[in-house]
Length: 420
Image (cartoon, rainbow, N blue to C red; front, side, top):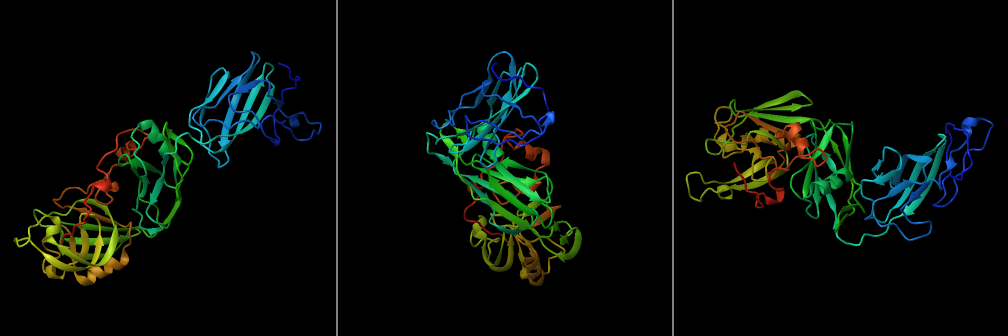
Protein backbone atom coordinates (compact mmCIF):
# COMPACT_ATOMS: atom_id res chain seq x y z
CA UNK A 1 0.00 0.00 0.00
CA UNK A 2 1.19 3.53 -0.76
CA UNK A 3 -1.04 5.65 1.45
CA UNK A 4 0.35 7.66 4.35
CA UNK A 5 0.05 5.78 7.70
CA UNK A 6 -2.48 7.33 10.05
CA UNK A 7 -3.34 6.92 13.70
CA UNK A 8 -6.48 4.80 14.12
CA UNK A 9 -9.31 7.15 15.05
CA UNK A 10 -13.08 7.29 15.37
CA UNK A 11 -14.74 9.26 12.58
CA UNK A 12 -17.30 11.83 13.67
CA UNK A 13 -17.60 14.36 10.86
CA UNK A 14 -19.47 14.98 7.64
CA UNK A 15 -17.80 14.08 4.34
CA UNK A 16 -17.91 16.23 1.23
CA UNK A 17 -18.34 13.89 -1.74
CA UNK A 18 -17.27 14.79 -5.26
CA UNK A 19 -17.82 12.54 -8.31
CA UNK A 20 -15.91 9.36 -9.09
CA UNK A 21 -12.19 9.90 -9.09
CA UNK A 22 -12.40 13.09 -7.02
CA UNK A 23 -10.91 13.52 -3.58
CA UNK A 24 -12.76 13.24 -0.27
CA UNK A 25 -12.26 16.08 2.21
CA UNK A 26 -13.05 16.14 5.91
CA UNK A 27 -13.78 18.48 8.78
CA UNK A 28 -11.10 21.01 9.49
CA UNK A 29 -8.58 19.86 12.08
CA UNK A 30 -9.07 21.23 15.55
CA UNK A 31 -6.23 19.42 17.28
CA UNK A 32 -8.53 16.66 18.45
CA UNK A 33 -7.41 13.28 17.04
CA UNK A 34 -11.04 12.17 16.94
CA UNK A 35 -11.64 14.75 14.20
CA UNK A 36 -9.26 13.06 11.73
CA UNK A 37 -10.84 11.77 8.50
CA UNK A 38 -10.41 8.26 7.09
CA UNK A 39 -7.78 7.96 4.42
CA UNK A 40 -8.73 7.86 0.74
CA UNK A 41 -9.04 4.15 -0.09
CA UNK A 42 -8.80 4.65 -3.86
CA UNK A 43 -5.69 2.47 -4.10
CA UNK A 44 -7.09 -0.16 -1.76
CA UNK A 45 -10.13 -1.20 -3.81
CA UNK A 46 -11.13 -1.94 -7.39
CA UNK A 47 -14.64 -1.44 -8.80
CA UNK A 48 -16.15 -3.03 -11.90
CA UNK A 49 -18.18 0.08 -12.73
CA UNK A 50 -17.38 2.81 -15.27
CA UNK A 51 -14.73 5.46 -14.73
CA UNK A 52 -15.66 9.10 -14.17
CA UNK A 53 -17.01 10.59 -17.37
CA UNK A 54 -17.04 7.16 -19.02
CA UNK A 55 -19.87 5.10 -20.40
CA UNK A 56 -22.84 4.22 -18.27
CA UNK A 57 -22.97 1.01 -16.26
CA UNK A 58 -24.91 -1.93 -17.65
CA UNK A 59 -27.89 -2.46 -15.31
CA UNK A 60 -27.87 -6.13 -16.34
CA UNK A 61 -24.57 -6.67 -14.53
CA UNK A 62 -24.05 -6.81 -10.75
CA UNK A 63 -21.78 -4.41 -8.90
CA UNK A 64 -18.52 -5.80 -7.56
CA UNK A 65 -15.95 -4.20 -5.25
CA UNK A 66 -12.69 -6.03 -4.57
CA UNK A 67 -9.96 -5.36 -1.99
CA UNK A 68 -6.50 -4.89 -3.59
CA UNK A 69 -3.36 -6.32 -1.96
CA UNK A 70 -3.00 -8.38 1.17
CA UNK A 71 -2.84 -5.70 3.84
CA UNK A 72 -6.37 -4.34 3.77
CA UNK A 73 -9.98 -5.43 3.69
CA UNK A 74 -13.46 -4.08 2.93
CA UNK A 75 -15.57 -3.51 6.04
CA UNK A 76 -18.80 -2.08 4.60
CA UNK A 77 -20.41 -1.12 1.28
CA UNK A 78 -23.63 0.78 0.62
CA UNK A 79 -25.11 1.55 -2.80
CA UNK A 80 -28.13 3.84 -3.18
CA UNK A 81 -29.74 5.59 -6.14
CA UNK A 82 -30.97 9.17 -6.26
CA UNK A 83 -34.51 8.18 -5.21
CA UNK A 84 -33.28 6.49 -2.02
CA UNK A 85 -33.45 2.88 -3.19
CA UNK A 86 -30.71 0.72 -1.69
CA UNK A 87 -29.00 -2.16 -3.50
CA UNK A 88 -28.68 -5.32 -1.42
CA UNK A 89 -25.25 -6.92 -1.34
CA UNK A 90 -23.08 -9.58 0.19
CA UNK A 91 -19.64 -9.06 1.78
CA UNK A 92 -17.17 -11.94 1.94
CA UNK A 93 -16.26 -13.01 5.48
CA UNK A 94 -12.62 -12.05 4.94
CA UNK A 95 -13.52 -8.63 3.50
CA UNK A 96 -11.94 -9.43 0.14
CA UNK A 97 -15.01 -8.87 -2.02
CA UNK A 98 -18.49 -7.35 -2.02
CA UNK A 99 -21.09 -7.93 -4.75
CA UNK A 100 -24.67 -6.80 -5.24
CA UNK A 101 -27.46 -9.35 -4.84
CA UNK A 102 -30.42 -7.25 -6.00
CA UNK A 103 -30.82 -5.75 -9.48
CA UNK A 104 -29.78 -2.22 -10.39
CA UNK A 105 -32.31 0.21 -11.82
CA UNK A 106 -31.89 1.40 -15.39
CA UNK A 107 -31.43 5.12 -16.12
CA UNK A 108 -30.45 5.82 -12.52
CA UNK A 109 -27.60 7.56 -10.70
CA UNK A 110 -25.96 5.62 -7.87
CA UNK A 111 -23.68 6.58 -5.02
CA UNK A 112 -21.39 3.79 -3.81
CA UNK A 113 -19.76 4.19 -0.38
CA UNK A 114 -16.95 1.77 0.43
CA UNK A 115 -15.36 1.53 3.89
CA UNK A 116 -12.02 -0.26 4.34
CA UNK A 117 -9.47 -1.04 7.01
CA UNK A 118 -5.69 -1.40 6.56
CA UNK A 119 -3.30 -3.79 8.30
CA UNK A 120 -3.00 -1.40 11.24
CA UNK A 121 -6.76 -1.07 11.64
CA UNK A 122 -6.91 2.48 10.26
CA UNK A 123 -10.23 3.23 8.52
CA UNK A 124 -10.42 4.18 4.85
CA UNK A 125 -13.27 5.48 2.74
CA UNK A 126 -14.03 5.84 -0.95
CA UNK A 127 -17.21 7.37 -2.39
CA UNK A 128 -18.03 6.77 -6.06
CA UNK A 129 -20.87 7.87 -8.26
CA UNK A 130 -21.99 6.35 -11.54
CA UNK A 131 -24.97 6.22 -13.88
CA UNK A 132 -26.72 3.18 -15.32
CA UNK A 133 -27.84 3.05 -18.93
CA UNK A 134 -31.03 1.99 -20.64
CA UNK A 135 -32.02 -1.68 -20.70
CA UNK A 136 -31.63 -3.48 -24.00
CA UNK A 137 -35.28 -4.53 -23.98
CA UNK A 138 -38.23 -2.13 -24.12
CA UNK A 139 -40.72 -4.47 -22.45
CA UNK A 140 -42.06 -2.81 -19.32
CA UNK A 141 -43.95 -4.16 -16.37
CA UNK A 142 -46.44 -1.49 -15.35
CA UNK A 143 -48.43 -1.59 -12.12
CA UNK A 144 -51.92 -0.19 -11.51
CA UNK A 145 -53.02 0.16 -7.91
CA UNK A 146 -56.60 -0.01 -6.70
CA UNK A 147 -59.04 1.11 -5.52
CA UNK A 148 -59.33 4.72 -6.65
CA UNK A 149 -58.30 7.51 -4.30
CA UNK A 150 -61.03 8.08 -1.71
CA UNK A 151 -62.40 7.07 1.68
CA UNK A 152 -63.27 3.41 2.27
CA UNK A 153 -64.28 1.00 4.98
CA UNK A 154 -61.64 -0.77 7.05
CA UNK A 155 -62.00 -3.99 5.02
CA UNK A 156 -60.88 -2.56 1.68
CA UNK A 157 -57.91 -4.53 0.28
CA UNK A 158 -55.25 -2.83 -1.86
CA UNK A 159 -54.86 -4.34 -5.32
CA UNK A 160 -51.91 -4.26 -7.72
CA UNK A 161 -52.64 -5.21 -11.34
CA UNK A 162 -49.56 -6.05 -13.46
CA UNK A 163 -49.41 -5.35 -17.19
CA UNK A 164 -47.64 -8.67 -17.86
CA UNK A 165 -47.68 -12.04 -16.09
CA UNK A 166 -44.91 -12.88 -13.62
CA UNK A 167 -44.67 -16.59 -12.84
CA UNK A 168 -41.14 -17.18 -11.56
CA UNK A 169 -40.90 -17.03 -7.76
CA UNK A 170 -37.64 -15.07 -7.76
CA UNK A 171 -39.06 -12.54 -10.22
CA UNK A 172 -42.19 -12.22 -8.09
CA UNK A 173 -39.96 -11.42 -5.13
CA UNK A 174 -38.34 -8.58 -7.12
CA UNK A 175 -41.77 -7.16 -7.93
CA UNK A 176 -43.23 -7.58 -4.47
CA UNK A 177 -40.21 -6.05 -2.77
CA UNK A 178 -40.73 -2.90 -4.81
CA UNK A 179 -44.42 -2.46 -3.88
CA UNK A 180 -44.63 -0.35 -0.74
CA UNK A 181 -47.65 0.11 1.54
CA UNK A 182 -47.52 2.45 4.52
CA UNK A 183 -50.36 3.20 6.90
CA UNK A 184 -50.80 5.73 9.67
CA UNK A 185 -51.44 4.40 12.27
CA UNK A 186 -49.00 1.62 11.34
CA UNK A 187 -50.33 -1.91 11.05
CA UNK A 188 -48.88 -5.28 10.03
CA UNK A 189 -49.80 -6.42 6.52
CA UNK A 190 -48.63 -8.45 3.52
CA UNK A 191 -49.06 -8.89 -0.23
CA UNK A 192 -50.65 -12.08 -1.55
CA UNK A 193 -50.35 -13.23 -5.17
CA UNK A 194 -53.84 -13.91 -6.50
CA UNK A 195 -52.40 -15.10 -9.80
CA UNK A 196 -49.63 -14.20 -12.27
CA UNK A 197 -50.92 -10.66 -12.81
CA UNK A 198 -52.61 -9.56 -9.60
CA UNK A 199 -51.66 -9.08 -5.96
CA UNK A 200 -53.79 -8.10 -2.98
CA UNK A 201 -52.53 -6.42 0.18
CA UNK A 202 -54.37 -6.56 3.49
CA UNK A 203 -53.41 -6.10 7.14
CA UNK A 204 -53.34 -8.96 9.61
CA UNK A 205 -56.46 -7.44 11.12
CA UNK A 206 -58.68 -4.83 9.49
CA UNK A 207 -57.28 -1.37 8.76
CA UNK A 208 -57.50 0.99 11.72
CA UNK A 209 -60.44 3.40 11.62
CA UNK A 210 -59.58 6.84 10.23
CA UNK A 211 -56.24 5.66 8.88
CA UNK A 212 -54.28 7.00 5.92
CA UNK A 213 -52.84 4.35 3.59
CA UNK A 214 -50.20 5.25 0.99
CA UNK A 215 -49.16 2.88 -1.77
CA UNK A 216 -46.26 3.33 -4.20
CA UNK A 217 -43.96 1.34 -6.46
CA UNK A 218 -40.16 1.41 -6.59
CA UNK A 219 -40.16 -0.90 -9.61
CA UNK A 220 -39.40 1.75 -12.24
CA UNK A 221 -36.18 0.81 -14.06
CA UNK A 222 -35.65 -2.38 -12.04
CA UNK A 223 -34.80 -5.57 -13.94
CA UNK A 224 -37.43 -8.26 -13.38
CA UNK A 225 -36.18 -10.75 -15.98
CA UNK A 226 -33.89 -10.79 -19.01
CA UNK A 227 -36.63 -9.26 -21.16
CA UNK A 228 -38.74 -7.40 -18.61
CA UNK A 229 -38.06 -4.20 -16.69
CA UNK A 230 -40.19 -2.35 -14.21
CA UNK A 231 -42.23 0.62 -15.42
CA UNK A 232 -43.79 3.53 -13.66
CA UNK A 233 -46.85 3.33 -11.42
CA UNK A 234 -49.12 6.09 -10.17
CA UNK A 235 -49.03 6.18 -6.35
CA UNK A 236 -52.27 5.80 -4.40
CA UNK A 237 -53.54 7.27 -1.15
CA UNK A 238 -56.77 6.18 0.53
CA UNK A 239 -58.28 6.88 3.91
CA UNK A 240 -60.60 4.80 6.07
CA UNK A 241 -63.73 5.87 7.91
CA UNK A 242 -65.33 4.32 10.97
CA UNK A 243 -65.11 0.59 11.44
CA UNK A 244 -68.50 -0.65 10.21
CA UNK A 245 -69.28 -4.38 10.35
CA UNK A 246 -72.72 -5.83 9.60
CA UNK A 247 -73.26 -9.34 10.98
CA UNK A 248 -76.09 -11.36 9.44
CA UNK A 249 -77.19 -14.43 11.37
CA UNK A 250 -79.04 -16.67 8.92
CA UNK A 251 -80.42 -18.87 11.73
CA UNK A 252 -81.94 -16.02 13.78
CA UNK A 253 -82.84 -14.04 10.62
CA UNK A 254 -81.31 -10.81 11.94
CA UNK A 255 -78.62 -8.36 10.94
CA UNK A 256 -76.77 -6.32 13.58
CA UNK A 257 -74.66 -3.38 12.46
CA UNK A 258 -71.66 -2.40 14.57
CA UNK A 259 -69.84 0.92 14.35
CA UNK A 260 -66.44 1.06 16.06
CA UNK A 261 -67.36 -2.03 18.08
CA UNK A 262 -70.77 -0.76 19.28
CA UNK A 263 -74.07 -2.22 18.06
CA UNK A 264 -76.09 0.60 16.52
CA UNK A 265 -78.99 -1.24 14.85
CA UNK A 266 -80.50 -4.72 14.66
CA UNK A 267 -82.94 -5.51 11.84
CA UNK A 268 -85.06 -8.53 10.81
CA UNK A 269 -83.87 -10.02 7.51
CA UNK A 270 -84.32 -13.00 5.24
CA UNK A 271 -81.46 -14.86 3.55
CA UNK A 272 -81.15 -17.63 0.96
CA UNK A 273 -83.62 -20.52 1.04
CA UNK A 274 -82.62 -24.17 0.48
CA UNK A 275 -80.85 -24.53 -2.84
CA UNK A 276 -79.96 -20.81 -2.87
CA UNK A 277 -78.23 -20.46 0.50
CA UNK A 278 -76.37 -17.23 1.20
CA UNK A 279 -72.59 -17.55 1.35
CA UNK A 280 -71.06 -17.67 4.81
CA UNK A 281 -68.05 -15.60 5.75
CA UNK A 282 -66.77 -12.06 5.46
CA UNK A 283 -67.54 -10.00 2.36
CA UNK A 284 -66.54 -6.46 1.48
CA UNK A 285 -69.02 -3.89 0.19
CA UNK A 286 -68.25 -3.41 -3.52
CA UNK A 287 -70.65 -0.58 -4.28
CA UNK A 288 -74.16 0.77 -3.89
CA UNK A 289 -76.89 0.98 -6.53
CA UNK A 290 -80.15 2.80 -5.81
CA UNK A 291 -82.01 0.74 -8.42
CA UNK A 292 -81.26 -2.68 -9.90
CA UNK A 293 -83.49 -4.84 -12.09
CA UNK A 294 -82.98 -8.40 -10.88
CA UNK A 295 -83.80 -11.38 -13.09
CA UNK A 296 -83.65 -15.07 -12.28
CA UNK A 297 -82.16 -15.83 -15.68
CA UNK A 298 -78.94 -14.06 -14.60
CA UNK A 299 -78.22 -16.89 -12.14
CA UNK A 300 -79.40 -19.74 -14.35
CA UNK A 301 -83.09 -19.92 -13.41
CA UNK A 302 -85.17 -20.73 -16.48
CA UNK A 303 -87.70 -18.09 -17.45
CA UNK A 304 -91.21 -19.23 -16.63
CA UNK A 305 -90.12 -21.76 -14.01
CA UNK A 306 -91.47 -21.79 -10.47
CA UNK A 307 -88.34 -19.96 -9.22
CA UNK A 308 -88.29 -17.37 -12.02
CA UNK A 309 -88.34 -13.67 -11.06
CA UNK A 310 -87.98 -10.25 -12.66
CA UNK A 311 -88.15 -7.51 -10.03
CA UNK A 312 -87.29 -3.83 -9.57
CA UNK A 313 -85.03 -3.62 -6.50
CA UNK A 314 -84.09 -0.50 -4.55
CA UNK A 315 -81.33 0.40 -2.08
CA UNK A 316 -79.10 -2.42 -3.30
CA UNK A 317 -75.68 -2.76 -1.63
CA UNK A 318 -73.48 -5.18 -3.61
CA UNK A 319 -71.19 -7.67 -1.84
CA UNK A 320 -70.33 -10.10 -4.68
CA UNK A 321 -69.90 -9.69 -8.44
CA UNK A 322 -72.16 -12.70 -9.01
CA UNK A 323 -75.11 -10.74 -7.71
CA UNK A 324 -75.39 -11.03 -3.94
CA UNK A 325 -76.76 -7.84 -2.40
CA UNK A 326 -78.23 -6.46 0.78
CA UNK A 327 -81.39 -4.78 -0.51
CA UNK A 328 -84.99 -3.77 0.01
CA UNK A 329 -87.39 -6.71 -0.33
CA UNK A 330 -90.88 -5.43 0.51
CA UNK A 331 -92.43 -8.63 -0.95
CA UNK A 332 -90.84 -10.75 1.84
CA UNK A 333 -91.50 -8.55 4.88
CA UNK A 334 -93.76 -11.24 6.33
CA UNK A 335 -90.85 -13.71 6.38
CA UNK A 336 -88.15 -11.31 7.54
CA UNK A 337 -87.07 -12.23 11.04
CA UNK A 338 -88.59 -15.71 10.83
CA UNK A 339 -87.69 -17.55 7.59
CA UNK A 340 -85.16 -17.63 4.75
CA UNK A 341 -86.97 -17.20 1.44
CA UNK A 342 -84.56 -15.31 -0.88
CA UNK A 343 -82.45 -16.56 -3.78
CA UNK A 344 -79.23 -15.72 -1.92
CA UNK A 345 -79.46 -12.02 -1.14
CA UNK A 346 -80.12 -10.52 2.28
CA UNK A 347 -83.56 -8.90 2.11
CA UNK A 348 -85.06 -6.37 4.48
CA UNK A 349 -87.80 -3.74 4.62
CA UNK A 350 -87.47 -0.69 2.41
CA UNK A 351 -86.90 1.59 5.42
CA UNK A 352 -84.18 -0.66 6.82
CA UNK A 353 -82.55 -1.07 3.40
CA UNK A 354 -82.51 2.72 2.96
CA UNK A 355 -80.87 3.11 6.39
CA UNK A 356 -78.26 0.46 5.57
CA UNK A 357 -77.61 2.02 2.16
CA UNK A 358 -77.01 5.39 3.81
CA UNK A 359 -74.78 4.13 6.62
CA UNK A 360 -72.31 1.88 4.79
CA UNK A 361 -69.65 2.68 2.23
CA UNK A 362 -67.45 0.73 -0.15
CA UNK A 363 -64.93 -1.29 1.86
CA UNK A 364 -67.21 -1.85 4.85
CA UNK A 365 -67.70 -5.44 6.00
CA UNK A 366 -70.69 -7.77 5.80
CA UNK A 367 -70.29 -11.06 7.68
CA UNK A 368 -72.76 -13.93 7.31
CA UNK A 369 -72.88 -16.67 9.95
CA UNK A 370 -74.96 -19.83 10.46
CA UNK A 371 -75.99 -20.20 6.83
CA UNK A 372 -75.96 -23.57 5.10
CA UNK A 373 -74.26 -21.95 2.12
CA UNK A 374 -70.63 -22.30 1.06
CA UNK A 375 -67.95 -19.93 2.35
CA UNK A 376 -67.42 -16.77 0.32
CA UNK A 377 -64.90 -17.30 -2.49
CA UNK A 378 -61.47 -15.90 -1.63
CA UNK A 379 -60.91 -14.29 -5.04
CA UNK A 380 -62.80 -13.77 -8.26
CA UNK A 381 -66.23 -12.86 -6.88
CA UNK A 382 -65.46 -9.74 -4.89
CA UNK A 383 -63.18 -9.60 -1.87
CA UNK A 384 -63.18 -12.74 0.24
CA UNK A 385 -59.65 -11.94 1.40
CA UNK A 386 -60.60 -11.82 5.08
CA UNK A 387 -61.70 -15.45 5.07
CA UNK A 388 -58.06 -16.55 4.74
CA UNK A 389 -56.17 -17.17 7.97
CA UNK A 390 -53.22 -14.81 8.39
CA UNK A 391 -50.59 -17.58 8.31
CA UNK A 392 -52.01 -18.88 5.03
CA UNK A 393 -52.29 -15.35 3.63
CA UNK A 394 -48.59 -14.74 4.24
CA UNK A 395 -47.72 -17.94 2.39
CA UNK A 396 -49.14 -16.27 -0.72
CA UNK A 397 -46.30 -13.76 -0.56
CA UNK A 398 -43.22 -14.38 -2.74
CA UNK A 399 -41.12 -12.99 0.11
CA UNK A 400 -42.47 -15.60 2.52
CA UNK A 401 -43.12 -18.54 0.20
CA UNK A 402 -46.12 -20.56 -0.89
CA UNK A 403 -48.39 -20.91 -3.89
CA UNK A 404 -50.99 -18.37 -5.03
CA UNK A 405 -54.52 -19.62 -4.85
CA UNK A 406 -57.86 -19.09 -6.49
CA UNK A 407 -58.95 -17.91 -9.94
CA UNK A 408 -58.14 -14.48 -11.33
CA UNK A 409 -60.79 -11.82 -10.71
CA UNK A 410 -60.83 -11.41 -14.50
CA UNK A 411 -62.12 -14.98 -14.74
CA UNK A 412 -65.21 -14.21 -12.64
CA UNK A 413 -68.62 -13.75 -14.21
CA UNK A 414 -68.48 -10.61 -16.36
CA UNK A 415 -72.23 -10.12 -16.68
CA UNK A 416 -72.56 -9.48 -12.94
CA UNK A 417 -75.82 -11.43 -12.52
CA UNK A 418 -78.14 -10.57 -9.66
CA UNK A 419 -80.08 -12.54 -7.07
CA UNK A 420 -82.91 -11.65 -4.76
